[in-house]
Image (cartoon, rainbow, N blue to C red; front, side, top):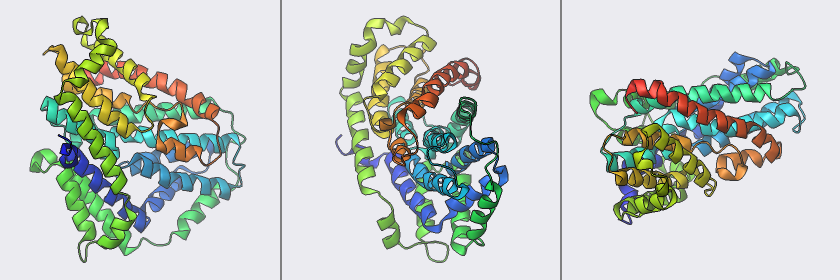
Length: 397
């Protein structure tokens, strides 16, 4: 039981994803994608925010780590602020970094491989509820919610703030020059692009070839390391990918979460907290609302969404199983519970990706709260809307 978390599909996907992220960073492909997207949207203030959000959504398919996406885009945002000649304490600069920090998190919702919590939750659902969720299934279930929440983030950021200018002076030239400095696409960038396109294609067509997500990720790493096709040696890749600590923390957390379910502690813990509310007699939608509210409150006790997922999702699953109500959409409720753990937009200490953005010394906590509090409220409202419409139409709930 203690080492079971080290051999789950979720752990394998996380490990392979870290190597894939390192390969992208070594070739510099993510910078080319980012500046290309910004070049398309232009230098009008509102369009820069659309561009940053579009960059995050695009990178969610290529960089399977919330923290890594944040670490990649934050320097790009700071470079733009410096090149534009904008004060780092300006309304534009402050909110651009807030947008980067929050969008890095939200972008993890839509793609199974875009966030470690998704892999952990999918693995827990498969082990305990015997429901396998493919990469394409997760995309179909969660990407519309992700895009809608991103749109809400853009609306709040651009409507709750009065920027110093409508268009950044000389902004178009700065973006064009930054893109031009990258030069023509290198051979390594082309090869890693093909490998990732091949990987995404296999993930999207899993039901036709039945090769699971984690196996495809391992195949992608093998291609990255292979002669002729590959872009890097094992020695360089292993030194660049911060695998050790992440894998140990994630795997240990999965083992603890599984132990909570297997020993019955998960069910006992949750019943101790909300069992007195008599949720076993309530409608599934009301039960889900109570669970989400409890999870958001408990989420503040964790400084990492990975640890929160590995601890709380098995607890939720154990509690739902303990209710003994076979009519409950257990796996759908568990997936929605996972989505709710992403709603940590209020305090920078809630997640490393927010701490990285906060560490740039551009915005203050009140700037994050100004966007984060209403965005959390909108996210909860969207859960209700999707529960009674889109997710019900798909048969999730």
